[in-house]
Image (cartoon, rainbow, N blue to C red; front, side):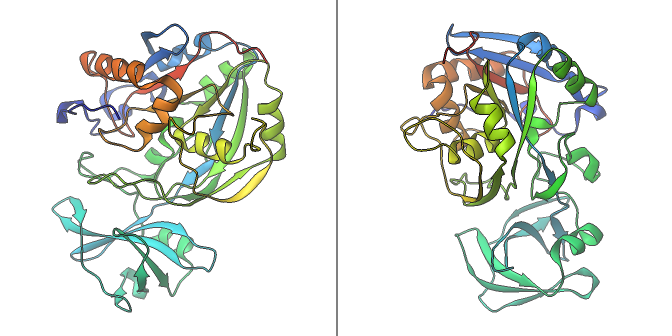
Length: 337
């Protein structure tokens, strides 16, 4: 696992639009896994960095306003379970931010705004509770919820700031942020160049910003059409986000590298020992020190090259987090099947 210190000045505290940039005008660092190269671009250069026949696989999950503020606490709604219960995180409110809250007891009832009630059932993890609400949760969140925000983002932003152009299936607690820099104009330019865009769905849960944890099970779906496009790709298969890598690698038929149509829950964790079989590369944000996502990136780029890339990102003053800059890891050469 690569190690580095992330200065606060390298955190993106607001959307790029608030910094006077277009959504697609953030920076893009490109790491070439075959050449061992690291180069620097603007995200609008992406059509020139890809080739006809490349397949971009995107996450079409849309972001829910999943944070409900109470007087002293906030409830972050994460994942709906098959039995209708929800995984939630309780957070202590402190000024305009929230922090970890270790309280709560099984059977405890918490009054929510609008007369709703949340009941804690049992701890699912040291951080997350399984809970029930006496309302339809997505409808309730649309009326009373706010986008989840952590302390490095200094004020609330509207839900639209947390949506991607691909998001058509509401269900993510937090934005699948690798897709955020794509604009409609950029997608049109990509398709006009002969680059294929194919969707999967993976509904993200809540992150663990104070103490990174391995990802827990999340709902996903890979359609027959996307499986076919990936399997028949003439160029590179590039995942837009770690969520896409997780979904596609879950759908790989063991021992073949072929992606099948699949849906359900995934507990798959990509590590260097496990490797990747469905994707050649990915576009992703810059991840925090000790993040479990770095294991996935190491599986694609190798630890030495990834470490050098992050040193470059720090030296070149890239911005981290969901409103920050992007990193593409991929071979320059089109794969030979």
